[in-house]
Length: 387
Ligand code: ADP
Ligand code: MG
Image 1: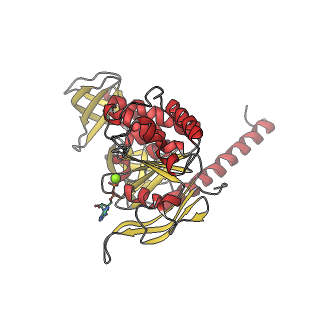
Image 2: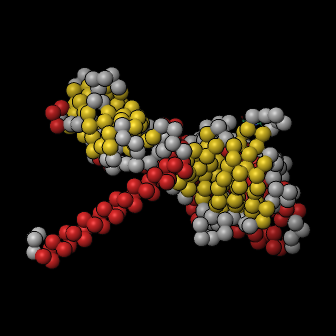
Image 3: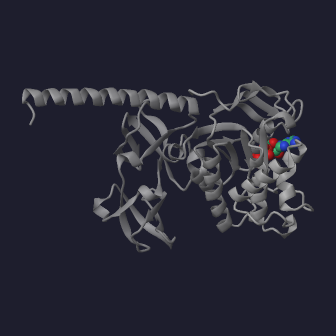
């Protein structure tokens, strides 16, 4: 990273009891300023604990936490330039909207006119202009969450921590708020760390996602990276519907599954290594039976609005999910076609570090090879040995 990280975790572990089980296991990351980060994981995986350690609501058992270059392990909550937005809003129910938003500024004894100006600005940003005198109890869930967000941004903290802030909202409102939050973050340029267990939400909103499982970061990357190249079965299933079958990597770029050999774009594994193979439902194309790479029989079909979701079984009894704009007939035998780059290979038990190292190595080799081929072809053109 070229910039100084806004938040840095160095070997952070957490246990809630003395001889106890580790809730967080050696967490390391560096966050860049001004980005939208998401911690994605199932309930109980340790997401809130990470936020609470940043906010100072709980201590790390070991390791160091830095905010904008300063070690903050021993800095009290109110001296940390971060603000948390909670799922239950944490608003003062008997006060009106204005007083709730103004609250952090009043504590800091900011001038009255300045407070008024900044509250009005914040209200405008969360689209609640005109609501300043409304009582909190008279607001809808979405409006309450907007007030909580206005209160978070009014202090212009370095980092805003959002702990499942949209989980209590219905689906339509949640989608609306996803757009608004993302737009707001980009406009303000404040670092957001957003916690969710909803993978679609994380894919839609984030610059960068950390997938957390049982107190560990399993994989991190951009939404596209993680969706396209899940490092293992856990990530692949967590991050969307997938077909995952057992396979064997015969050599670089050649994988065997379903008793057949397929060209792939992955490499850097041992010869004949056992692997998991992922193919996304939207990457499978229906063909005539004799034109597909796999032969399957259609078991069920559901219309999902934009596509048909087809479940079909191969002759080994494995189920394949296909997303297709073309309808199939239940009971019919169809072919399935896919491209080498649609086959994602995952090593069993590979860590993120190993994964990154391996990808780097074989991508490098590939680039050198491609460069050589280009050079030779160019020479051939110059020589006239190739037209
Ligand atoms: P998440 O936010 O991902 O759902 P949490 O960070 O809240 O997960 O919790 C992670 C684990 O730590 C859970 O097993 C939870 O039971 C445990 N835990 C959280 N807070 C406490 C606490 N104050 N005392 C003991 N255990 C806790
Ligand atoms: Mg939580």
